[in-house]
View 1 (cartoon, rainbow, N blue to C red):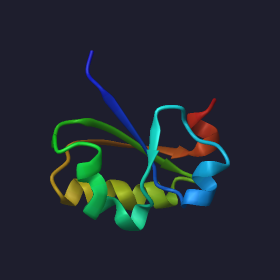
View 2: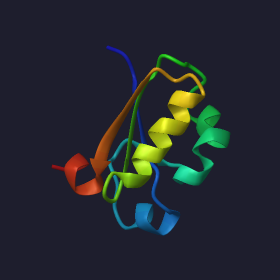
View 3: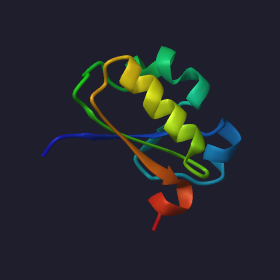
Length: 82
């Protein structure tokens, strides 16, 4: 089974108030510069989420532009924790 990388692209204070148990916090504005902290694998299974899905959509587009092929916008935190 392959590794799934969960990334919470909200701000640090939002992340601190609750997040997916496997998620790391990289705010969406920093995702392009910091994705290497999570994985260098362009085919990695990456799941991004935020509060409503808007910022994670931007993060997904950024990662896709960098060549990451399996990025899923999981929407908002409430969707992820269901």
